[in-house]
Length: 185
Image (cartoon, rainbow, N blue to C red):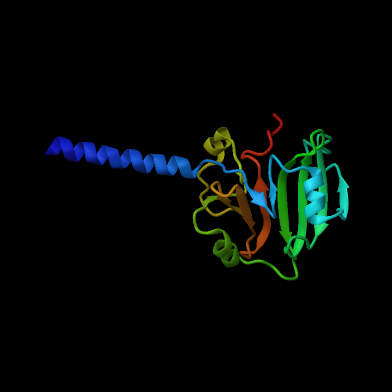
């Protein structure tokens, strides 16, 4: 009887571990019919039209201007009130990421984001960002107090939501994979 109980306990532990591991798997998202990693610049233009701005994105140091990416920016498209940024691979024209920035005059609250995307998220602080490497988790993992922006990461949906101190959404990011970008050494 003790042996059966032990085996049952181990079986439940394995099932729980597998369920937790599967929830961490990053699923490639689709936004407004655009499947990241498959949809192309032509698909983006069919969905949203001509961008308000396009060019190479500029990141903070050390990356600077990134020549292997192309950025398309739109205002108020696809039913979203705010800026939509679509990141494309410059060689293949394939969509790599999509970021949504809500209109600051009509902010989206933390509660609205959770209502839309659910409560099944991983919370990450600003030092880690939405997609830390295992080494970064080891180095910066346990913050003593909440750091802003806070990232609500939804691996099963392929997205994250960035929240500021006022519990307002700063950004909603859809990524083809997480970590999205290899950081410079």
